[in-house]
Length: 452
Image (cartoon, rainbow, N blue to C red; front, side, top):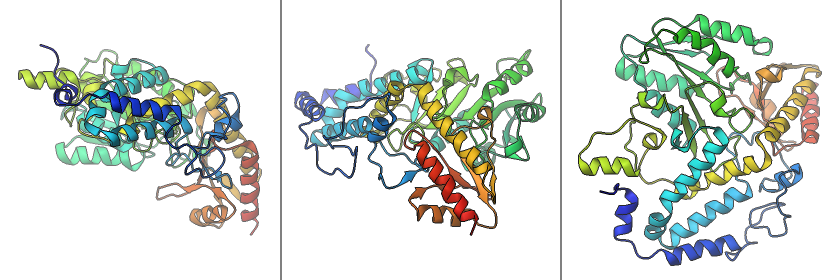
């Protein structure tokens, strides 16, 4: 019997989808009212914009409808959509609005597959290793709530992780009594070293440690953890352990994905969770959980998946098969026009080049760190070394609260943010939507604020 899926349920009662598919093709061709609602250079729908040249940073910036009067150093918090993503969102929205039933039946399975194919090309690995979620927080909650950890085992995380990691494990601990410990990896982030970070983490591992949960780039300090070195240091500690006792390395990767060149599959971790609406500039409300194929079976999904084999098992009265990315993906109805446009976000970065994006980001971040280090009255929090930092640069201005500094910069057309931690800092994120000239202007503006 053929596998039963939501698609087949819908198709059984669906009208022919040809008219909707034709509507989608018209949207692709530009017959959907291009030109309306343009808000600035490069705004979506602005037919005067030149064709996208992924080798030209001005052309890359032109793909975003961002206000050209603002230097967008907080764009990574919740990203604007570049033109290919926005057009895909609108194309799918138009199809769903014209005939939701027919468009969903004809599109969902292939569109989901296209997202996973593009994600696998970007992340490394296979499409089945990719689960789709709505955010980093959702992914962490589902993963950490579903990892099988026995009562005699424990979880090791760090003092530097964000609310989502800490609270996901706090909720798990409250529900099941799972033991969770934290270690501090550095005392002064600007002076942190690879040896210090790896050494402190490894020293916290015990024979009971089943999960090590870390964050690739700390959003409160800008410190980038050496994930590959951590994975290599943990590997010998798992030698001789049974598969059910081996250490699982899990990573909140949201501030590395889209800013770093290393493919996720090369990091050496077992799972990586990330929202794709930050440095990847993907559709708002999208995210991924990547898991190594051999690691996925240790996860128990919390939400039934709307994928063909799961429906087939349900129909036949069979138990669920082992988990993979497809089975981990929560079922139900989603903001499909955004989810399906995620393929274009991965392709946008692949067209530019993962290495080129990372180099552009790192060069501006290095320029910013160097400028701040030479500015009187300013303390740089983020390490200077590229091996320990990515796009986020954190700093303090003597005698001034971070929110006041962020407000003063905003008054000059420079968007930054405040780190969402008890120990707050000013945070700036150079990226593919900023320029070296804007970096210099940011340094000059901070210097002027520091002189007040």
